[in-house]
Image (tube, rainbow, N blue to C red; front, side, top):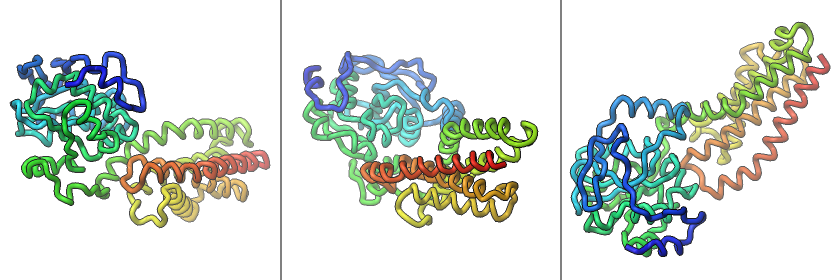
Length: 374
């Protein structure tokens, strides 16, 4: 194993943190740890492949963006089963859901799990942000004294983490060779049985309805966090400056734009993900806008919510508010989709964001005008 000077010379986007490569093992007091396994470097925590109700409760809560940032495990080396010096070493993130799914898949196997400090972010997103990266992997190998635990020099890294991990750099600075595993964790047993060789199907990532559906709750919660303040302001402004009593003015003048915001949220966070493959166009901002237009049309046609005031200013203002929000939230879904590339997302955002900004400002301005005209 190279010394710490190798880490210092490793080219990375961020400086090597102080203490990088210093020996440390995860704590055995974590609630999911079943015991410890004696190794040449100390007692390594043992984890099982069966998830208990506390694990499942945590998974449910983070799906709704509750406690997401604290849903982590300590980085370092873990054992599942009774691994030996020749057992496989699989690399994961310290986002607990990623860790739990991996150990659940490996139930019945004897293996080592090397957990990187990704700041509680899953493998795919952490690879894009740089926390699931070459430097952190080399640091974690040295900090766990992995070369003293296993006799081989092989690591299995998730394919979705490949954008952050340069295999040749890991080999150069740690001596460990990287093999990229299958895209889907459920293919790991077959991958291991095939001598760590992936079939062509294991390299393909689909994005079926079920996977898009499980992302909806967290998208809704994030959207509400963004847009609830605007709803609050709209209702207050309408109540203070509209005609009639505060409650009457808030309902008459504040309810239409509030519904427009909610329609935009539903269109961008629910309809867009669910209908993603069938919505025309490639740009997610356009897909979101189309969903917003569709839902707005349904609401306008089948209810009187947007026609309580006959003013064209109000009607058009609500449409613009819906389109801007649904377009923005639809575009935000690119971070969860397999349909886009990093460069494509950047290009679309540069083109779409000015239009979204102008659209919502225009909508709010027309709404204020309708309020002033009475």
